[in-house]
Length: 334
Image 1: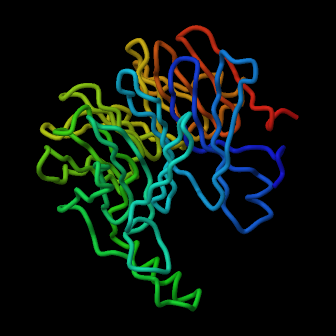
Image 2: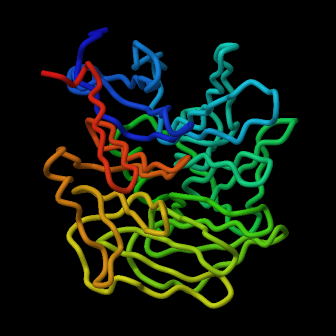
């Protein structure tokens, strides 16, 4: 395996103001080999060797999560593969779990790829295609998606590649594809997905929220019970809640998609395909630093301990509201 292939960053989360965890792929492996490898990378600003990594062969990590650690407990960080594999990583080592019927495989019928892992309340939640939502209990991962879950995808008996593609296409048609799940507590959970889909869980039942847009929705940022931000395709930015509905804050369509939202010092930031945006009086405004620092494919923005972390496709940036710092991974330095 080439150790010095350039890395493409895909998913990440902040640990504190000095540490960030991200998943990446090696460009040479992706280009030349028919396999998946995710390189999980720690950036630790206060150590001499700032970058550390370990590889997960056969994985395509789509989401990471750092749950709030209990007092005097070991810090643990989680990575989720699209097939429903979950790694718990800490100084004690790596522990692998599996969401039994997630992903797509040749075994028993599964519900499709999963897309996001998130801590809500005292539990971890995972969402994905087929309307699946799972919660991690002491006994393992359980479904809590009675009103959302759709028919599983059964591809186990299909051998012909063309028939397989047709079956997957047919199963995806009209499927609820959830891309994000979030909430301030477990009696107010939101899930969003394709074609403007929004659902709300009150602790007992899931219910659909009237579609505020036809655009694909990619991320949720709850502020309080009355204020929830949602963003998605073509610069879609929505504000509201399940009770009053959502309205578009930015009505002018953009050519870029929003993938992540964060609030720092009362200001709303959005990570987009072409850089970093801030919500101003006239709608989202793109930072010129997006060009200055080459910030394309900003998949993650997160406010933590007074700083904004920005993860672009090749580099990591930290912003305190006035000063920018760019951190280059050694693999990506020419």
